Image 1 (cartoon, helix red, strand yellow):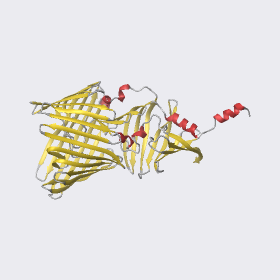
Image 2 (cartoon, helix red, strand yellow):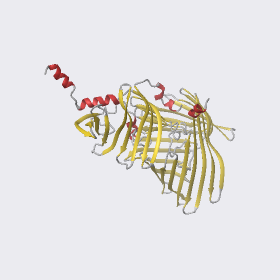
Image 3 (cartoon, helix red, strand yellow):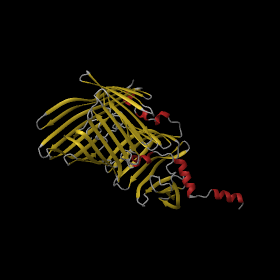
Image 4 (tube, helix red, strand yellow):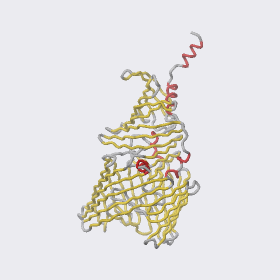
Length: 305
Length: 235
């Protein structure tokens, strides 16, 4: 295979992230430096994917350096059947904040990343029902967990079932309507804990506005930039600006119904060119009824081949 | 003058309807295959994205080919829009209203990008003559009669010789001029005379424009059937 053909089939993306967050009241800081490599190669029915980085994380008291593998898998797809083997990300239900089946960062910025799980994934796509199975190997392949999901798309509706039969009893139901407005709900019953997330999304002037409600019978952890939010009940308002190209604001307002404390994230992305993104933002976190504001700045340089 | 001559002259008479029909004929197709580049400019900053794709009716499939976005795919099926994200190797369904939103942050909406017969919603309301820089042009005004068009009113400058539009102004129902589109290059493709390069300005934004250039395009040719299936997005 000559080099030109190899490059046509390959997508190599190198990036360098620099991110710094300062907590104003405590004078704490976080510095993240991260060179990242994403490699994607397709050959016939097969696809190889690799996403890894080297992370340098410095806080006031600690220094952590580590090589991080986010995803690395081989995929086989023939017709409606697909299978993946390796470390991979699968998000059941609807991707977005407060997904009860998958703990993703509440908000995506330069510092955030999603890390896959190691296992074997199977999916058979069909217009009547699409079942999938994800066998996950943990504890150095000694323990096996099973995630099952089946979903169906009918016109503007999508509905699905989710289960983790190998891990006590986890069972979920989700559904959505995708029209002029979008309505989504996702429920999960795991052992004695019940979680429910509901969302309505609609266009408002030049924004896409989302109202979220999340309730759980036990307190849950939500990752925020540089912090975690521990609560049972949240109301949130998310405002995105899809028409903004070069300067992209984003606002996420939380209202913690348990402590009656409002929190927020305001993010502003500034696109310099195809390769360079600058980002800045303000966020708050709560600890013992005290609010701690933080500011952050970051840059991402990307070069694709 | 005999009757035949009179009938011939009447048949040659230019009416707003006949001009609109001629423009529609040039812009309409049942299927298309294209390779294109979109340049989004604001002040001195420029974003360039390359993509290729297919359309069939109002459905389309687009795959980005520039290194930074390579592998991102869009599929429009009827009123639904799906996006394939290679980083999570999965398809995310977008709200139907996203079709009215900006395409990858450009001045074009998803609806502007690919349409089987983009002027089918409109009826002509007036026709007049004008001349710009020595070129004789018609001014054709169109209005949405269905209530479903992306823009309520279009004011079009049409070249008298080729009967092709050279400039469009797009208005809201309240009469606000929203966008301005200029045809930069026409090319003869499969019996049509098609605008392969356009520049669109969103008049709400200063110092910005979107340039859309098709480098390779064919119309009414067979497209692979499996392209318009969700499973294909994950290939």
